[in-house]
Length: 393
Image (cartoon, rainbow, N blue to C red):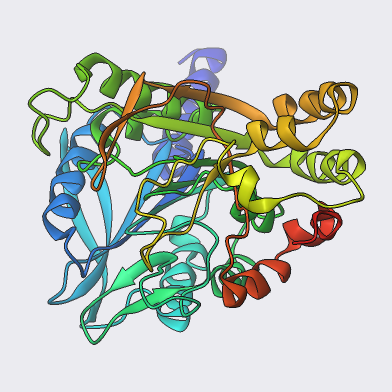
């Protein structure tokens, strides 16, 4: 045999052998891992199961760039599952069973976060979080018996999570590309400000959420996008805008009552606090008169113990700052909003359909005589950094 031919044949055999021994080098680190935390041991149980079906539909469109973990507690037991695409189908791979527990508890929530974000199997280039449950803005549970904050678990009493406890959990979690609240009244500047160090974008609604919640079949495929927060919010809004007809024939299976949703850039919130502090008047304001001048997203009766008051932040500033100061402040406000949209009207369980004319997407508290709540408000970072003591609050 010609030596050159023999040498080439040997090299070919060696190359084939090395290829056979070489492992598959398909990348295993996804672009993003997202945890959807569903605290549904309450009257939202059936919506949780429907939303999980929607997530499975959304995951069918994915190709490995997203790891989706779902913690779900519907009352009888809680479990953590990975929704994973296998052979064209989406399956629930059970990561852990927790049994019956308080899903609004601090240690219980921290345990789930650790099971996801400390697990090398779920490591990713970036992370996202969706918190799904009942909610009621910044107000700490306990300042009013009818007040709730994020998460409600009714398996053993009435358990809910306060903002300070949630922050303590986020301190041990990775930085998030987005945190989305699929819950009522969460487009609150007070809450977003507390969470500003833990996420790039903050997503929530200033009003009561639609009964069916987010359309997860549509937003799940967007969760790994570079611009995920805005993409998710805009698709969320479009879904309900297309169904909107002023609330005629509204039901949870046919939500015609519209919605509103806002995305805040957390990197701009400290400048917004500074701008707010700089333009507030030094001689206080008449808070009661102000509550009658500024749009209130909270349609519960003001005489009821459940009423909080979620006032339009931009309108509030228009009423307390002079024209020149407001123009400067407005630039900081607009810089903080990455996306905002609303249908002409939104729905309230207590007031039915109401106009959203003149609204701007971010809510702000105005004290209303509840001293226990006012004391709690003064302890928030937003109150301190935005200089609200100037107003006599």
